[in-house]
Image 1 (spheres, rainbow, N blue to C red):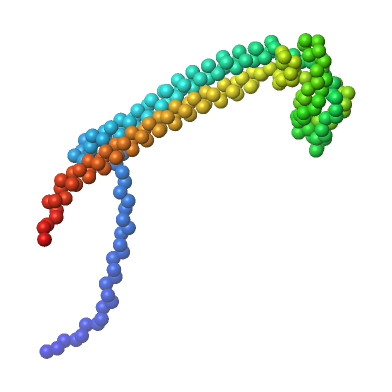
Image 2: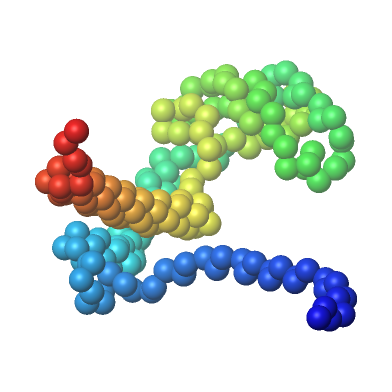
Length: 215
């Protein structure tokens, strides 16, 4: 006895594949006890801890030490310049170059080399090149800074210049310590990982014959 043919059923829908979730690293796994942790892992963790703790401490020490030394040096230089440099009256021998934008703020701050004549501290009249404002004509009077030997020089170092140079040397000292610490840490990690690979190769050389079969 034949029964009624059941109606056709649609094929089952395929289950959507779940995307693979990335494996998240376990934080501080080198500090936790587990059978896979190696001695080199502990050494790498101690190296990272030393980098985090020592670099800021040594960096700040270098920052203040270099800053203090630089400040004392530049203050001595500024005092010596103030004693040996003189602000003298001079006269232009030739016209100074014109600025492309006369009357602008840039023109007021710009200085151009021009030949000037002045009386040096030793009483002799000298001619030399000095930085003067643009647009001056020959015969105009200017004031120039002259060193003890009678050669044109810049003005004595100001307090702002001392401060900026001191801060520059202090920051360079801190960055040097930070870069040195990172380089040492990187070299230590590289050496430890090379040692891990060498140990793995040695263990595999002992285990590989057990996995191979003779034919």
